Image 1 (tube, rainbow, N blue to C red):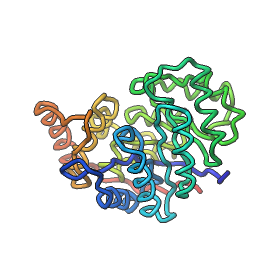
Image 2 (cartoon, one colour):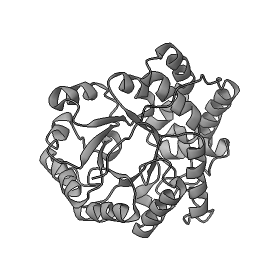
Image 3 (cartoon, rainbow, N blue to C red):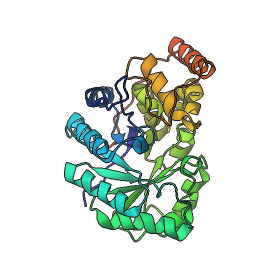
Image 4 (tube, rainbow, N blue to C red):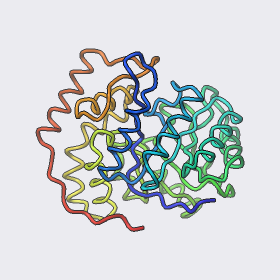
Length: 307
């Protein structure tokens, strides 16, 4: 299994579409390159924000291949695995390995509301099907299956399960997991508006939605908090928070893509069942962006993350 050195900000990269909603590979590739140029630490593709469940199998593979090419070995690339069955999830994990990605972020089996032992068995099954490092993704508000600290602890014997992305909003879980299995798992913040609290409690990385629109600010916030420079981090967090709250909404993908569009980094187009924001919702996001851009802070000098 490859050595894992994941830390810092990994934007959950958006998947770009043409006006007819066909996959726009060139623009998706460009979005990834721009994020890397702006200093992000890694990329997550085909996640929630990447509209994984709205992509065909071939489109997912195409996006993975584009990410591999765009990164060019400069940053790690992790592919989201979101499928209805364990067998399909194993298949996509094998494709990620074939392409040469650096890891997979595995969601619980979708649609089926599994029992705790079934949830654990799904992750265990995928972990056995690949030599790639596995990030377990917990997002019960969106995917309805809760990967509790107890379930995660039961996976401690799975060698390839190395990381846990926590998007429940309950930062106490970082402490609970550490009390159960110590530092067995690398912890990632998964909800934008709890990132500083998560870092304080041991998160080494952040899978970020709004860093798609503000990658430099996202990376600066993470590094300030990781360095214990909390007064500076708080000032930046206060500025960022109204936008970070968008990541916790059911329509987070539409909101994040609209923010990307406003700053010229991508389009706002999403595939059904995700529909465009209403006029009122659009005006709300646009107002938040006007305020953010008008008060955009100067970023302090921050040391690079330790290798």
